[in-house]
Length: 63
Image 1: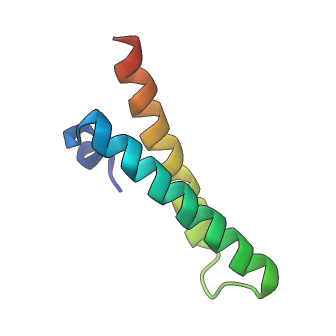
Image 2 (image 1 turned 120 degrees about the vertical axis):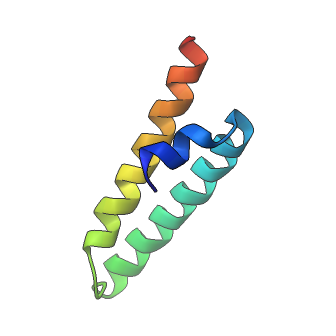
């Protein structure tokens, strides 16, 4: 998910997306622990998406 896409979402949508992305990350992490993922770079990309969304939420709260 790109930063420009994140900025277009409302705060409520961001909260919902953050929950979904965190769940996706934990599912990927668990699957990777059981048997290695075909593309382990997915973990990094999803983790960075979580950080981008959380940063945007924090930025909006501080304004």
